[in-house]
Length: 460
Image 1: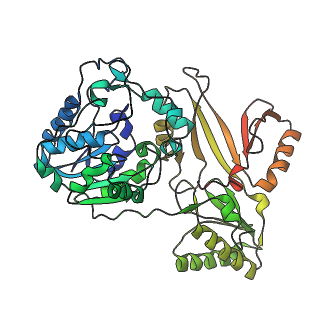
Image 2 (image 1 turned 90 degrees about the vertical axis):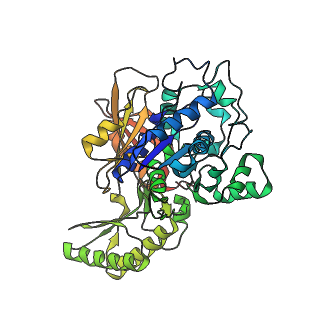
Image 3 (image 1 turned 45 degrees about the vertical axis):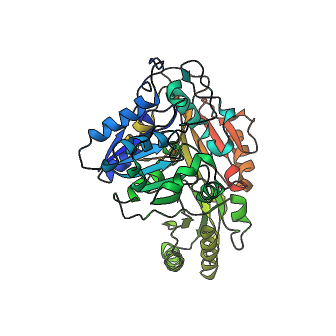
């Protein structure tokens, strides 16, 4: 099925660069649109109207291969795809509105923005709420601003014009992002004008996607799964979200003294007398995981067994991780395997790029990795170091560089830093201590020794 993707203000078809491949891999035909005037910063936007943007979506509907399409609109584009559905109600199988609302007839497409002349540039980040920016990160903000194109004033100031009440029969999925479904329902019940069109729709499904205002950048794989799950594309089953907890909350749990929170989850190592001795613990962990329905990563060696919790690809912790960790520690003690957190280390590679480089597709292809969020790439089987993409500041065109990130337990970081300095390294930057220490080798290669993840009070 054709899935037409329309991003909100300041964005073009590029915004779906991770969502579209996931939809295609699921057997559908994604159609990311760049609306009139949004292809280039230098484009003439002086005469472009809301009607022009709606007409571009209608044209894509008419050009679709099948009898019906799914329209996905983000933010202000929720009103645009709603108007396109009003123009072609018989061709639209479902509307998916992501972080936006169906603008009613005679109402404004958006409010609260004042264009400058013929266009509305992307505002300074300080003008957005923290909830809007959640998960975007400095790299995501830099990339967004590099690609952003001012929106036409005629669209921002446009008034919605609708004509066909058959639009009320089109099934709608409302994806709540920087706000929750509970928030949206409360606004509808309170009679808030921007959301009152929901009361006229006959078939609405509400889905939470906890993140910021731009989930195609911050949670693209989760957004793709939600889109694919919606009827008639799928059966409506969406992978459940886990309630995440902070590293501090994990450490405050009972029975997790053997564990440290490093990149990717909570980690522990239990020393064994032999490979067979370690295999006994592996069998116990498998039984615990089967009983709890929560499965860790295991690595057994003749020296012992590494265990890492796994709730989400981004390494976020859940209460289920703490429960599993406590049970694994109990099993290790019964089998006389001693915990040894001193060997716990997780490596990452930071790829520093110029703002216009956008090198993540190259690295993911070369390593067989998967993109994660706006700034990372990961081994899908969680064996190899993660990649973190940063923007070079100040930018240096045509240059890129890398450094190693070393995630270590909080109680070991001082000794690790001291050992590196004693071995000929130097402290290159202490401005982020005690979160991380930036060291340089004798030949000036960079290493960040980071302990922040082990005692963070933020749920990540």
